[in-house]
Length: 118
Image (cartoon, rainbow, N blue to C red; front, side):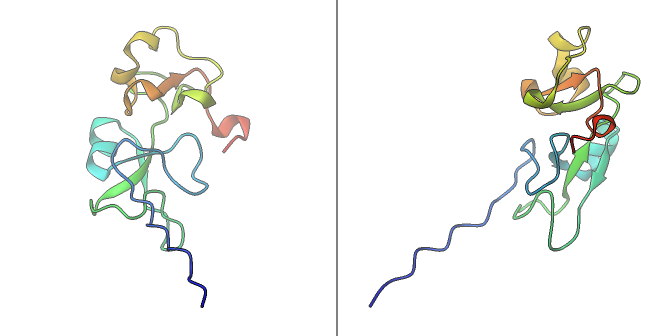
């Protein structure tokens, strides 16, 4: 009798983590109020088959897209560091003031969507 491999635990999202699935390099998991009120971001909860922040015990955890960066003008956008071609020079040393996610999410001089990367 062969045994089945163990079922992997579902991914559990936490605030400040990347969004899962195909949500792009501009999406960070945050509580909805923090996304809208603190970062002036655009919250999205996706749909039942494709949530950006699945498995969280926090009921209001959503995918958040911050565009433009807090206190900046378009096309500046908060992106995960590896997706940014050009970090906003005046915001580089104070990235955490312009974008959620600490130093892993930075204010870029370009938009993810404008270049068709998402």
